[in-house]
Length: 366
Length: 102
Image (tube, rainbow over the protein chains, first blue to last red):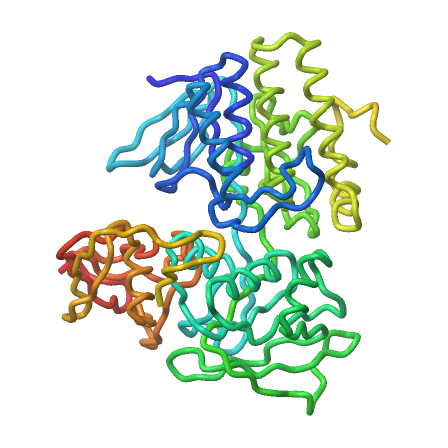
């Protein structure tokens, strides 16, 4: 039987940070990811991060990923790639599958950092080849370096929609428009301004009525929406496009937390059903922690800090850190998390998360 | 279309060219390509046809979750082409319905 001090599921920013903290404290760590390469979405994030200097603002996601992987190496984290964690069983047994075999790994602590998946939006023609997630376009362009189309229509003006639109321009495509059903732009002003400066229209209070094309995307019919989000007849217009990207939100990948019997809460603005957790990122199951998008959809920078918190809390509970040492380190991270959750978007998430984050309270921050 | 030069990622490193066969046609790919990426670069849009209505499907998530891009690869059906790397001489066919071992 294989066993370890801590198993971390998901090698994105949260999982990498958690792995580093447990390993730095001297714990044996196994980091598991179903992909062939660690880093999660960081390798697709070729834009500079936003926020304060202590949060790697101004540094590109790809650079942050390289730094984290180096640290994992330095502290001796064991990484299992192309390995799917398909279940969590009694006694913290993790069912693993990869390389044509299945086995069980027992971990004294488990940190779930599985991330999130893109939501879809059905409309007539949404299954036609050429309609895809904004993340799919981002992966194709920034990882595989191919452009699935030349004229992109982006649905959704959150940060993902805005950033991926800009990245499409960098990759050499045209962006026809960014369509937003809400009356205002969803993402940060700084990202929206970059799009606006290029002359790409951001059509608020608009949606897609249908896709044009028989066996692949040739365009879309857009329609304006009234205050009640109902289409306004007579406002239909057709735009040419060979690719339609959906950036309409993310939802936490919570299957393993469900299977493990964690208690959940439902917060639509955090992406839906979220495992309850405290300020140590500990779930209702004592030996199981969450970090990153699985704990509520936010950003890579908050995912990193949550991963560090979970890693330190797990290390402390394993007796690898003294109470005093852990408390002061965690207090620093919590302070940084609070400052990351400034601004209208961050504050909303903070106000939604903090009410259920009982236990190991943050005491010093306002 | 391949992105050979990129303002942030720079120029693409040279990779070994290989040939795969897709629906009987030779397609040029590069070592390290995912099958779907090589097909997208070659202008392929239809990866499979649905079981009941024969409607075409293409890439949708590109990270191995949605299974919209599955094809028959070397006789094996339901291969997620977006996360499966190309190999020289691979024989790939458009999948219809649930797919069959061939």
